[in-house]
Amino acid sequence: DHPATKSCFSFVCISRSFQRNDSSKMAETRVPNKLYATHPKNYGKGSRQCRVTGRKGGMGLIRKYGINMKRQSFRERATDMGWVKYS
Image (cartoon, rainbow, N blue to C red):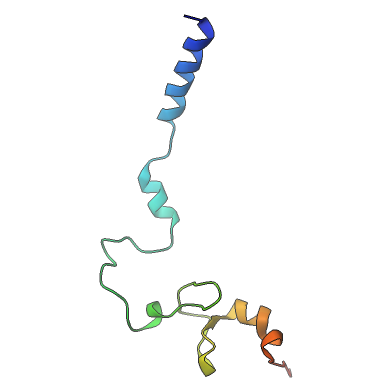
């Protein structure tokens, strides 16, 4: 056996011990945990989403005239849609 092989093997074992656990992945997402959100959301702010980005509704979702876009997406695409800002 080559001495470099032993050192590489020990390095692989050490690097695997420093991997992140699965609970950190769950904390990074903004979607609620599946155990708490098992019932389908067919009404309210959480049922609506932006037609461009797919982000969930709430503050900043423009629903008037059936636009259904987040405020930021609407500002980027308003002139292409034919809207004119007067003030």
